[in-house]
Amino acid sequence: MRVKTPRAVVAAAGVLGLLAAVTTGASTTARAADSPAESATRAGSAPDTLHLPEVTSLALSPQLQEMLGATTIDLDTLAKLRAARPSIPGEKTPPVGTTLLWPALDAAKGGPIGVYLKQYTLRAVGNHVEVWVASGQDGTSQGIRFPEGDCRNDVPGSVEITDAQLKSLVSEFDNNIYPKETAAFSTPRDRAGINTIPGLSAAGVNFAGDGDNTVTLVDNVRDPNFYEFPENRSYIAGFFMPLLNELTDRNIMTIDAFDWLHRTGANPKDEPDDDLCKSRPARPRSYEGTFAHEWQHLLHYYQDSLEHTWVNEGLSEFTETLVGYADATLTVDQAGSQGSLHCFQGWSIVKARGNPNPQACGGPQNSLTKWGDEGEGSEILADYGNAWSFMLFLYDRWGVEILAGLHRDKEAQGLTSVQRQLDQVASGTKVLDVLHDYQLMNLLDRFVDRKDGQVRGIAKERVTSKSLNATVNLENPASYAKPGAAPNGADYIVLRQGKDALPTSFGFTGAKMLPGAQESSSGDDPIALLDEILFGSPEEGAGTVANWHVSLVGIDAKKHRALVRSVDGFDVSFGAKDLAAFRSYPLLVAVVSHDDPVDTETNGDENAPYTYTVNGREQTG
View 1 (spheres, rainbow, N blue to C red):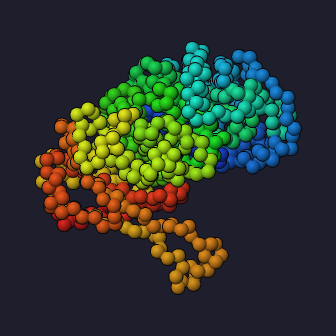
View 2 (cartoon, rainbow, N blue to C red):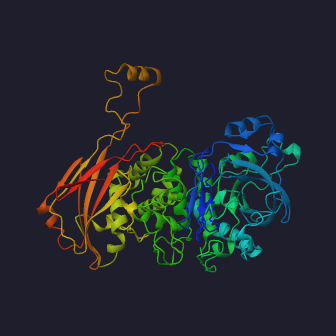
């Protein structure tokens, strides 16, 4: 799911992809989570995305409580309710202009994420899609407007969706998104709304329609941004939530209604402003991109509902490249550049053409595989940018086949699945070696990925990416400042810059265990032994650091050349003779990475401590 900013857009990965965006004048969208019971956010083109937590159940509105005889729903509850009632005959999608009730999300800050029934009007129908726009009124708001008194209601176009915009969205889905994503990934099974839930149909609620259509609900999603702006600058730009699929027996997703004027089409108006109420920078194809992103989550739900968040979100981010809605080579100085990439590469703090409303939102020290390691809120945007960059890196080296394999792999998740795909397309290639190449690419790509670019110490094609134009902002403390190194992430530490003296020595010592971990689970400790008897032994390898990989990278930006020296180990040293090789490179960077091949999804801090010395002076990483 995806989130945005300046109304700040937030997209939800719903249980399966929810992303929220922040309103800083830029917007981002939310995406889907990884499992039927998860929610995730997706980052769009603005550096202001908000991530919703995992959603395993939804609180029901009083109206739905009365219909269903329950206060909450989860996937198991819905399956039991459906089993108690036979299917109804199938019906065709009703004509344009029909008004019906559909489920809507209420994610008010501080409360449980809830669902309620809301009136929508069918505004457009295509070959594989139907678009319903919120049109009802209650005590909170009317149609797709914000609550009364919200400054965004007063900005022309902020809460207006035209027939021409909807027609364009339908055309993009039928003629671009649907054929390209089904060809690359998979096709969802038909859901015609015929397997009803007792209580809904009895109350006249009917979700039936053409089974091969994706129901698209356009709504001003009730998230913290909706209720309290500008205190909450991120919003849910769109989401796919498996719970709503199962509630309605339809393939269903939601797109936010905020500011389609500046976020749809190839060349929308560009009207940035320092006033968050009025800031409307151009975000070409932003909502179309959100649709493409969320739809991958919908497809993935049927293929591998247990996939790790970073893989699922990375594949959804990749779809924007696949369908042509996002150009990941644009820099922060260019309009239409991608906010999630700004956040990951560290450029989001820079005010520039492509980032009119800067903010801190994570950085290059980000873990690829641990979602949310730099914090929740807008920091999640860096997770999106990291996962997207990695998928583009894989795509440039081995084509769409490796990503298709990740999408369809029902048996393995995370790095294990990546290794399985590498075994198919590049036999003998190890996933951790690919990770190390990727970490170097994030630093070097922009300097050396050109015809006259030169790289010594490693093959140039291993550390460049055609689909990216990457380098990290070494001035951003989020390149290294969080203590320790994140699992499957890298710290980028400047050792020499400009006319600084070249170091005469560099040493590194990395921890073998994570903080709080014990090398032996029980030993002679009777309490620990009793714990193992009662609760089982801890997972093998838990708390251990598999490996450290340290690279020294010399860069001459003007001459587009680089020198790389890399070594594995827990204790590493470079003497004066080793460092002399970097004498002609004005910039010297140490790239320190912590390998974690287990790649399990946990809640604890998994940053591994390390120290390094420069000219004998010890510093903590």
